Amino acid sequence: MNRPPAFQFYPSDWFDFKVQRMSLTAQGAYIKLLCFMWKDSKDQCSILDNDTAIASALGTTVEQWLKLRAEMQVEDDSLFEQKSGKLLSKRLAFEVAKQKEYREMQSKKGKASAEQRFNRGSTVVQPEGQPEVNSSSPSSSPSSSSSLSSTPPLSLKEKETTTSSPAGKAIKGSPDKNGYHAAVVKAIRESYKQKFGSEYLFRGGQDGAHVKRLLGTYAPEQVVAMWCEFLRCKWDFAGRDGATVKVPHNITGFISRLESVIEYGDWKKKMEEPNFKNYMTEILIKKEAVQP
Image 1 (cartoon, rainbow, N blue to C red):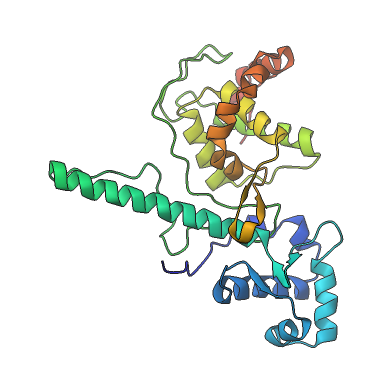
Image 2: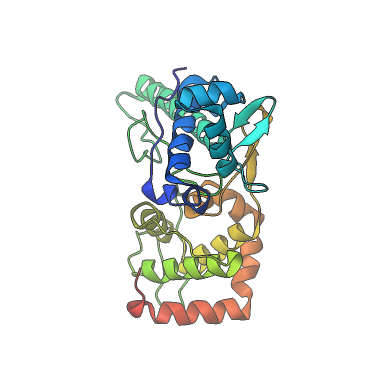
């Protein structure tokens, strides 16, 4: 299978603290190393941990590279993992695994479509989720291990929910027809800040589209309760070379693990908590005054 030639770059991801704490020179060296990893390494997420070779590739001296390296490899909060004589980017490892999963999914759908056309004529199986860009760059910026960009869009289950919101309107399977998007975004931001003590960097276009799609299938109370359950847990999966890749606590990560959150079930307990019910009632009744 051909190597993916590119990853997407999202400016909002680049403004993650781990990147912005570095000097401009170190930031430039960092993105250059990520490009070397993606383009030249077999696994597309690592580079030989050889200071002389890296300094030469960056066009600088070993002494200068070691200073830049110190900015990247802050103790207990480094950008690269040192493993088996290599510098490994878990962020890129996540991208590799994500693109592989997406390609395999599209391949299965293509085979299913061909089989249906063969058996039934010209019927085409439409993909449940379309990539946000063409297949040459279906991934996001690898700016840090804690900030994740786009996962292939969610394929929401074809189902309806008749759960009523506190505002008294039933939510059925249409894209946020009752206008709860801004209220849910506010709840997402507030619950994130309560959990981690920092502001959630909300990407209006991509994150907003995900929220609207969720509200086309689930009631706002359900979306917020499932989001809170997602924030409560740690999520990861095995990437290439056995590396454990963490799923970041953002909306894209939430979408990628939604089915697991639903199956886990504790979000339903959240919906029964009196404080949660009161909060959602207040925020949804005041939805007209909420700004996204």
